[in-house]
Structures are given as C-alpha cells and as structure tokens.
Image 1 (cartoon, rainbow, N blue to C red):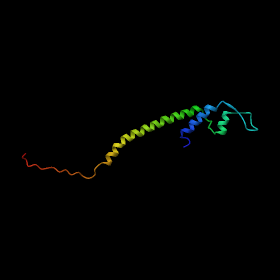
Image 2: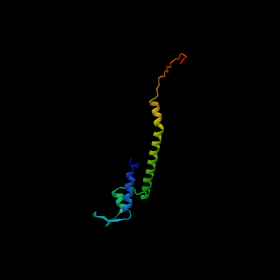
Image 3: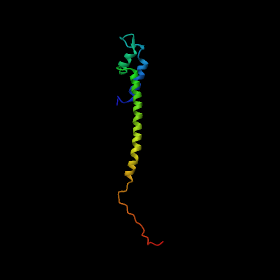
Image 4: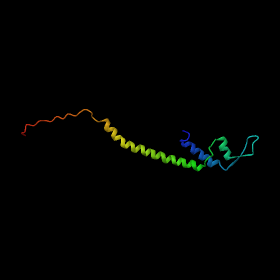
Length: 107
C-alpha cells in the first residue's frame, strides 16, 4: 500500500520542492552551525532522495491517467454485462404453453 498511495508521492515531491537547496540554523548542541534541507529530508523526515521531485510528479500524473482508464473500463464493462445479467435473471425456464381457440369455420 505504501507504494501505490498517492500521498507518498505528493508529500515527498512537495517536501523536496520546498527544502532542497536551503540551509537552516542548527539548534542541536555539538553539531554544525547550519543544516541543509537535504539532511532534514533524509535524516528527520526519511524522504527517499534517490530520485527528483519531477519523478514524484510524473508518478502522480501517471496514477491519475491510470485511474481514469480503469474507471472507463469498469463503466464500459458494466454497460456490456448488465443486459446479459438481466436476461439471465428474468429468463423463464419452464416451457410455455400456448392455447389457441379453434374456430368452426363460419364467421
């Protein structure tokens, strides 16, 4: 579920966009005077840094297209299957008997 949830790619792309390339003052004792945005993402928020924010955006767009195509396929399949199900549901399995009046020949 972690890899197919759109929240992962949306948040990571947002964080990468906002924090990469920035430096912040470090308030921890015994550390460097500043800390980079990449270190914050990697060490504190555990964002995967193996790919760029544009890959996250491409995955989100791909998910949107995939979900729309999947929805269209489900709708079209439902349109095709629904009449067949109705036909099976209301089909009469008993043989029908037709009674016809016998006419005497004169009107």
